[in-house]
Image 1 (spheres, rainbow, N blue to C red):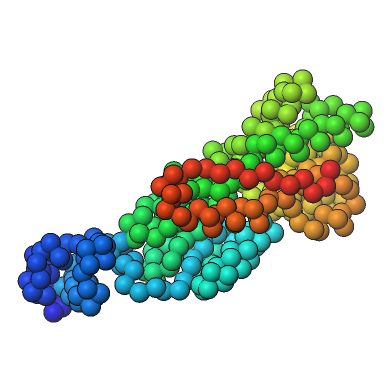
Image 2: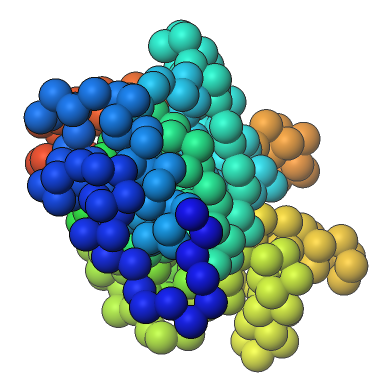
Length: 337
């Protein structure tokens, strides 16, 4: 029953005729409602098989039908290069295994096309649920999960198509910046010379961290200037170049430096090593890694509470939370002040 070249588009009526079933039955199966209306599993399998053979495009929801439990649970994340995403992946795997499922974790390097392809593949494998971590705009992925009747949760960056579990970026940035201002003033320097480095303008996490940074400055009586924020992305080579440009432009280090992530921090360290410049300024980072304990200077670091975030994420798989689709903020933890 292979579709012929040049044949008109296969319709639901063609499928119904081929399997000798009513149009309404075929419609229910193709829309993923077979179990609700007590259509036999073998009938549903036969209809789906025939539809594929005839070239009828079965939507993701039909492909993801719960004809049998897959025993799989999926997670998408950008990469493993910092402690936060690595910890998310490990905690996810532990939580999935406790539920007697097999975890599948895939990094996508923040490539939208890769995110879509990976999500499509995981849904075709009928994962029981999907965690979407660090995706700037998860709307398309949320829609795919909805069509496949697969529960999903956005982690780290929010979306309106599913419940979202996110660190309280604004409150955390406010806390770290306040610590930096105190350190700057304790050394007799001015808080007017502080710098926020890294992140992507227009991205939820970056925008909220900048908002917390600026709020702390205003609370301290500082009128923020545009050159106090440098959104240079996350790559170390970008932050190294941006930090170098700041120092050359001002002829000195900032009095206080708020770094948006560990990968951004790596670029600052590269600059310091390559120029033999000691980071003689107050430093804070909205990220955490144990290597900071070996640095020759103190860093105020925020550790995102992965354990709490993942516990809330797993709890968000319930029907009620899936329908609520709210944003749940988790306070980060100040590791070093």
